[in-house]
Length: 376
Image (tube, rainbow, N blue to C red; front, side, top):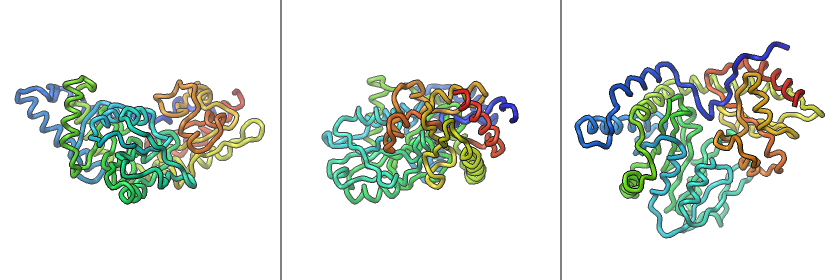
C-alpha cells in the first residue's frame, strides 16, 4: 500500500475554496465599495445601483432567467426570510422530511400546519391529502445536502399547480446553484456564496412576476431595520458572489464533466471495499439520481461521525452529514426519511467534490478507508 495523501479535501458541499481571481475581486470591492448601501449619500446610491445590477447578473448566471434578488449573509438567513412571505390565515406548508435543518426551523416559525411529503420508489410524492386549497407553500430541496439525491422539482410543480394553484414553490438550490441546471418552475431559489467558491454572501432569487413581491420586500425591510432580525449584508461579499457565480456559469459544463469523472472513479474504487465481518459499503443514491458533486456512502455497523474523525487523521476531510449538525447525537433525518433503521442512520459518510479533486485520488482514498476500518 502507498502512504496516505497529505490532504484530500472532500467537503466542498460545506465550503469551497475561493479561487485567487475571486479573492482579488473581493479585495478590490472591499477597498472600493465599502460604503453603507443604506445611507443617504451619493456613494450609497451608487452602491445600491451596483448591487441591483449584480443581482441581475447573478440570476442570469445561476437560473438563466431574470429574477428579483433579496441579499443576505448566509443560507440560514435566507430561510428566515420566509417570515416575509404574505399568508392568508394560517393554512398549511408542505415539505419533505429530508430538508436542511435551517429550512425546517424556518418553516415551523411560519406557523400553521406542517405537512410532510411521502416517498414512492425513492421519489418525493405528494398524496391527494397533502396539497389542497389551504396550501400556501411547497418547500423542497433540489439536491439533498447530505445524500446528494436530485429531486425533480419541475415534476412536483405540475402537481402543485393542479392541486394548489395558489401555493408558492421554493426550491432549495444551495447545493445545485452554479453546478446544475436549476428548476424553471420555482418561485424562490436559494444561493450561498460558500458553495460557489465565494468568501460569503447569499441570495434569495424570487419570481419577479409574483404579485406578493412588493409586500414581501416591505416586510423584510421592517424585519431588518425595524425589528433588527437580520443584519446588513456586506456589499463586497455580495458583489463577489455575483462575480464567482458568473465564473462558474462560464465553465459549468466543463466542470460538470470533470466532477462526473471524479464521482465515477470514487464509486468504482469504493465498491471494492470490504467491511470487517464481510459486509460491504452501501451507496445511498444511484449514480443516475445523484448530483455528481456529492457521493453518500453507508457503513453498516459503523458510526459515520467516528469514521470522519479517523479519516481526518490521514488528511482526508469528509462529513457525516450537514456541517451544522456535525456534533449532533441524533441519527440522520435524511437517512431516516429513506426508511432506514436508526442504527444504520448513524452510518453515513458524505464525500463532496469540486474540480480540485481528480479521479486518481480514488485509489488512495480506498486505501485510507481500509486502514480506518481495520483500526475502528
